[in-house]
Image (cartoon, rainbow, N blue to C red; front, side, top):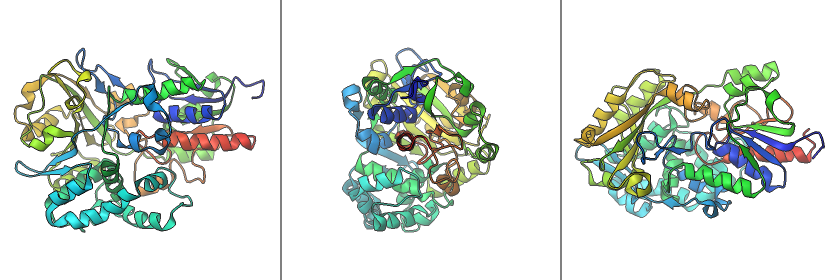
Length: 477
């Protein structure tokens, strides 16, 4: 390292991608410093007592199939640094009404027969993906434009992924199957008629059957704590309570990697005007309204399957989910919103006092929405769990504004690092052969605003670090 540099690489932001980038660079023997403005590492991937003492809630996502399936995380000895996984009996339950519920098991062979006349079509869709899940995931979790290692396999996957959820479900006839796939597709934050929205159905279904939808023991913070401990074991350094407002505040370094969104990058760095204008056109997409509950008992679900499910989707039929999501995308609030819920304490008793439970719940809302949906959400839950309101001991409501205050990367309450529409999945944050490089020498972006986008998988940081390492070998040219 040149004498006028304190570090080979400085990473701003200690979310999963920032930590992944730092680890990748430190693994190659380069000196690495991570700066985090919060008192703890993790970004939104943290676990805190948000409601009452002893009730440990996930600040961001609660269920982590991408973390377990991540090609990079899987290569790291994170179990040696305290990370362990809990697998719910049922990864996903989706009540349709008071008599019907769609159930997704990790076993494909157990799930398909529950779909009746759609069983063979469901097997035909997911069977090949599950068989080749590691190679499919390896290809999917990188920039879309790249030379694939398995061209035919990826061409087949790509043709399906480019479809909308509406087009994909036309292969099926049962209302249960269609509702199940609608719930998976709604994770895209897109209208179910949007091209490319089917890719979320394929990926989340593949993960469910290949690795499950697991919960980290102790909460999401266990993931980033394990990453931080491993980084320190490699000789990397982490400093918290370090708020960077300008690039001039950074130590001397050969490369700086930002685990932030384009909006913050523009505020911190002095960038060429043409590149800055392209970043200013970056879209953030819909937001979330989240509630964390402390409960005096389990949720009183009317469906037995929900009592054994790590994740519950409350959205009703395909048509009801599709209507709700189209409203959100058009900037309106849905009267009957699609809800996502997680019940970690059914498997992890360490996260609440004895015989008590936590519930994690959120719904999609328009970008920056200031509507209070507490009553709407609780009324919706009560439809499928009568008496739920009586179980509430405490709640923490996080509207989009509160989420952004907690973590500036959650711009307008968006949790995906940017809108997931097809063009922005290709040009993320701009159209570039190496999207992690900015137009300023030695400056890189490694957040979920780069490929492959949102989710706790660390692959944005991994790919950005590889771009840095290549440039190190080329003298940062």
